[in-house]
Length: 485
Image (tube, rainbow, N blue to C red; front, side, top):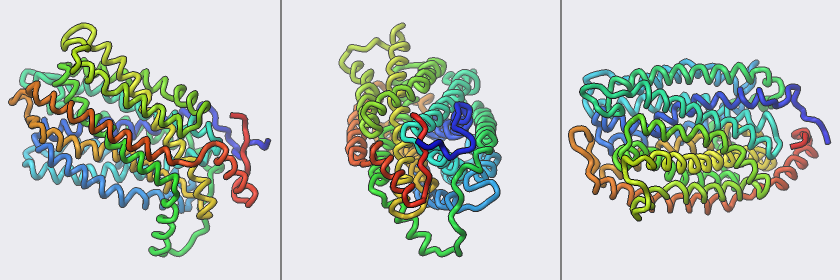
């Protein structure tokens, strides 16, 4: 066995500092997934279909921009390496733009708010990509060990969820509070501007801590390829060739279908908890605290299962678990086997179901990201290039697909079932909520099953990965790194 090539070993401190950077993405995701549709639709009274269509437009722009960002970070030549310049440069602008998303100018019409949402959300998601893609791409550079990558990326997903959880605490318990004219705190417009600036501050701190904390690893990271004159046609061919890897494509397909299911569920979560389960803002905040325990147990669960059966099978098993546990309280309610609204057992039971469901979801996302990292060497054998940034641009797009298609589809579902744009003035009926849930459950189930089918075609296991490393080492492309896992 040969020692690791790194001058600075991947210690627990490195994992913590690297992972902490995803707090910024977690904060953004928490806002987009759980609050954006509610804020623009039910607080600012932009029709739900328009909000969904606005986010779909932004998602289509993402699809074009993210691969270019990934490719740019793969070829950048600087004294601070390929990744860190992006991390430092985005800290301030991404934070400010996120705050502005929650502070539109007063007096705008519904149409003007629609265009404001498109413009500012596009800027936010472009800047978060400019940070998140290079930052995520550090993982396969920091270690090439099969299970260590799962551990490293597990810290990233853990902190991403914890960052979103912190903002959930602050939103539901501190910032979005009721007043005399807004008995539901979630519908009080005064709290959203405060929420935006607090979230912006947390995003800035997370980015800077992670960038500074991993800075000393720059000498250990891969150097940029030799500089070449820019050729648009060649760049396009390089990107297409890199993204044509079979294992990457099936992960993309699985991620898109899972993103539809997760995004739809997350975008409807507040409506279901508020109007189906009858919870207050404080009680919803308590339900979301389940993610704290979920984030703690997700990585050990994912690591245990993947050590036994490999990453692909582990991801599929955890997905099935999330598919079964997630909608179970809703099904039990329709069967008459779940506590009635307002009874003492309702809140703790919902909390317990959320713990398990979210843990399975985080574990699956961790394994999928680790599987993307293993595509790096597989793709290098074909293309002769290390394209961590380009591969993780796909992972970034999958994550953003959650919120993008989720808000888009949720907006149409809400309109379809007749959900009012202003539920304070027009109370939501039980029939509307029943129809909403009865549409959500079968649609999300079908989408999850399609995701599982796609990932089943992924072909890189531990033996394949180690064979790829050996072939690259024999060709002189990468040294063999073998520390005990």
